[in-house]
Image (tube, rainbow, N blue to C red; front, side):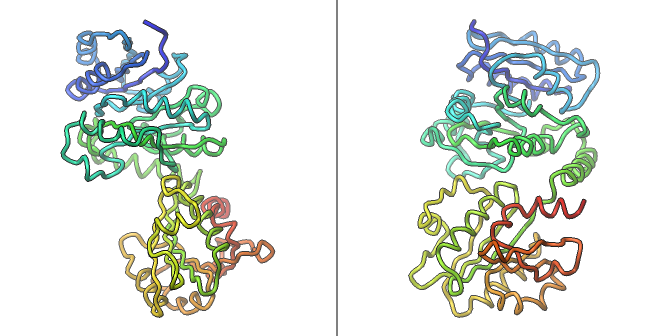
Length: 400
């Protein structure tokens, strides 16, 4: 067969019943020259016996890489990647089932966009799709064909199935082995890629089924939660903590040019895995929903992850905004920003028991003031709109 365009790496511990449908689907639905590397990560004879039952296809060759003991998800994948020279690497969880066109469509997207560092496919656990909820997997794949060539920008890819050009790995490395076993290695890779000028995306026309979280995991729930907590602390000490921010914008004291600047900074916030929520008091003739607002400024929602908006035109806007902020109990806002200082002063008494910061957003760089995140003076601070997109970085640096 031809030399492999892609190395598909499937790491497994000791779950032959989970591994078999995954490998069977890869052999059936992969139609470009590839090498499937099964990493037997301390699984012993059961995985070895299963591997010899698999048969190569004209497009997919097979390789078994074995370790006598479990060296973890991070080190196992790093070792498997280091031994290849294909143009692309695809890391695939052993509890995934691929569908027709899965790999070809992700590679086609990466070929046309050299600044893409990592590509996720559509997935049942990544984005909720009512239209395919009860369809067989191959019909799901046919449904997503209608989005051929389309993609969504992500803050970070998720490691269940991620396609990576090998040149990117050569430039920034793969997974950081400071991470214990697994969890947040994919986020750290994504942030390093974005820091190097790349983008992380989701291919809208490729589909891979992934077992719901934890159902096929070889790690106990107690161990998994401990790893998540430990690695999250490591990740946030390096990259900062995601910020949930309500941005209350009143068009009666602003203009369209300022609103566009704000939306552009919100897009940067979303790509950085923050969660900005715009609460907009629009003019009578203004847009009545978020999609209409983005269209008015020629912005693409698919390139603007994590953005939410509540839009209204009402004389009771200030009261509505306070209620919207105050009743956010499950996932409280870390900060509330507004272009209307009167609103922030009116909001002032609520901040003490709701425990959020208030930020007055200006639209003149000459008014920008440094923010001291260590001081109570951060409350009611002034910040130019140009700094909002980097607020996660500013908070991280201020805490060092």
